[in-house]
Image 1 (tube, rainbow, N blue to C red):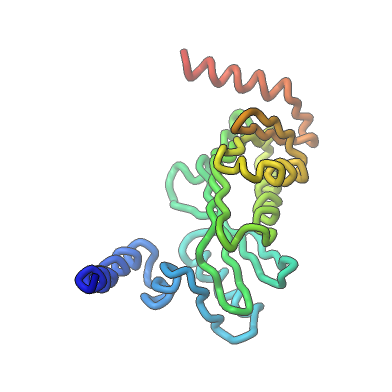
Image 2: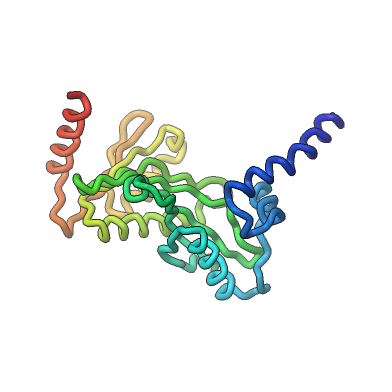
Length: 223
C-alpha cells in the first residue's frame, strides 16, 4: 500500500502539469489542486462578494468566454453563468454553459455542465445534457441555468427546445417532471424515459409544426 501511495504522490505533479497546460496558469497550481479536490478557493478579499464576482468574471472573459448573468440565490450565493467559446465553427452549434458559485466559504469551481445543440435553420435547440450533481443539487442552480437557456432561445429566435429525461433520473422522475413543467415544458413520460418539449409561444410555435420538423429531419438523415 505504501508503494501505491508513493506512486500516486509522484504522479500527481505530472497530472497537475497536464491540467495546467489545458486550463492555463491564471489561477496557479495550488488553485488547480483545489479544483481537483473540489475544495472552494478562498475569496480574494474575505467577505467581499462584489469584488470576487468582478475578479472571477474578468478571469472567465480573459480566457475568451462570455459571462451571461450573475444571480444571487436564496442561500446568498453569487452564481455566475457563462458560455464557453472555443473560437471555432462549432461555437454557434454546440453551446456549453457553465456556472461558477461564490459562497462565503470560497469559490466553487466544480462546474456543472450544460450542453445544447442549436439548429438555427430549424429554429431548434436540443438539450443534450444538463449535469448538476452532488452538492449542487437542490440549490436552485438548475432553475438559474434553465432561465438562461430560455433567454438564449428568445435571443436566437428559437421556436423549439426539446430533450430527454434520462433513465438515470428515473428514481426522482416526479421531481424532474415538475422542474421542466415549471418552465413551460410539455413532459411525456414512458417506461424508463421521458421526452420534454418547450414551444416558443411568442413565435407561434406549435407541437404539430415540431413533429413535422422532426419527421423531415428523420427523412433527411435516412435518405
